[in-house]
Image (cartoon, rainbow, N blue to C red; front, top):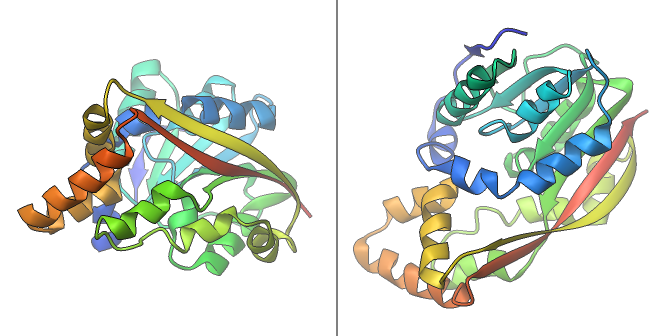
Length: 255
């Protein structure tokens, strides 16, 4: 498919996922992107949808494997980065601006549907799960990754930050995943760990505070005193120069 950006999504949600140097943190997900594409064992010409594709980590790998790829994201800013990366490699990927709660595709249009730490942040989880199932061909594959409740997500309250991802963490619970997706997919859950390191807590804070879009957006919305208080909390937590989080990888086969 030709590289293109179509559609328009406006509003605070789209803005919160724009502007940050997300490509920096996305690079640290590379082993997860590799894992996802490897699990799919894509055949040339198979149709893959990368939902909430960000800067295209999965989309690019799938296209290199010969799949016919579409990536969709709510942020035009991140899509533009993905499109530039695809163009630099000469990969024919279609990128659409849109919402995972209302995917602009036909029923059963894709052989594989993927979302790496993306669709889990949608406000309406039931509708999102229904859309992921709707566009997946019977017998097709779903791969989705979700963060679990951990010390990092609990840290936000201590830092004075709204718990934007409290509901998203529900995707990390087996019972919740089964309720959302179990009727549409035969499910298998696998565990995973994501880890990043830096020379110091300050260096790691610089990375996460500038490249995690919702965190960056929140910091920009509060005064200098609140920013300084949050920085102290996060840097103290990151002092060892390591951030490690557990995640769940969901494999589904469409019924």
